[in-house]
Structure formats: structure tokens, C-alpha cells
Image (cartoon, rainbow, N blue to C red; front, side, top):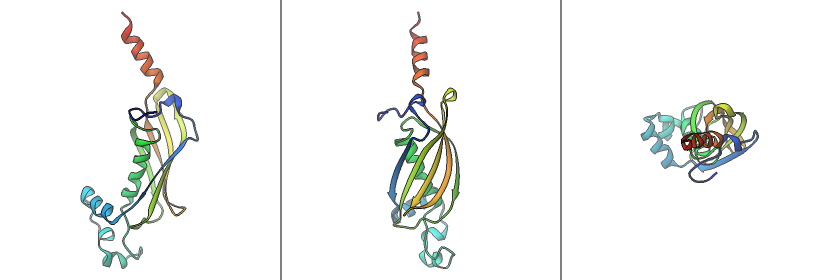
Length: 154
């Protein structure tokens, strides 16, 4: 793996994992509201949010879930990864100031298709706040070598 290319399917093993952590700030929540168009008052209005079952403002679920994409794109499998599918369960709220730890773990590899299935979780202070599963497509050293060999045949 390098900055240009992530792990090839041949290099991945079930059980490999990676993490990415970020503290969710007030600015993150406001900016995400603008980017996503989700201006639900539970995210941006403290007075309103205090009257909800959450008893205060919470971050957008998809803001926290987006950290999974950061792990997949930058760490495991890494650069070049194509996100195909994501299943998510939102289990607990994330609040401004919480540090979210996104983790991915390889659970299945389909080498002939270059596909990888990963368990995805986000946690705050040891509590899982998001649980899910992702499917991604990754490169293949074998396919690249075969393609290169086919192009050099005269």
C-alpha cells in the first residue's frame, strides 16, 4: 500500500482492521447541515433539542457514519477503494465534543470479483453508536499483471 494505491485484494486477510478518530465539533455539525441540507432543529437549535428525548443537540448520524468512508478511503483498503454498499444501524447519539472512533474489519474477501466485505463500527467512549457492514471493490495485482502482459504481446 502507498499514497496512490491501497491494498490489492491479494494482500488482504480476514481480520485485518483499521481505525480513524475525529472529535465532532460545533462547526462540523453546522457545516454538515449546510452541505447535506439536513437542518433538523435537533442538530442546530439547543433550545429545541433540549425538549427532545435526546435532551440536547446531537450530530447528524450520517456525519458520524462518514468517518467510515475516511477509514476505507485512506487506511483499509485505502486509496483506490470503490464504495459499493453500506448497511448502518444507528444505536446511540453523538454529541458535539464527542470523539468518534470509526473502525473497519475485513470479514470476507471475494478475490475473483475484487470485492471485500467489512464490519463497520463507530464508537464513543467505548459505546458502539453505529454498527454496520460495507462492501467495497479493490484493485488486483494479478489482474493488472495480466492486463500488462496482454498489452505487451506483439
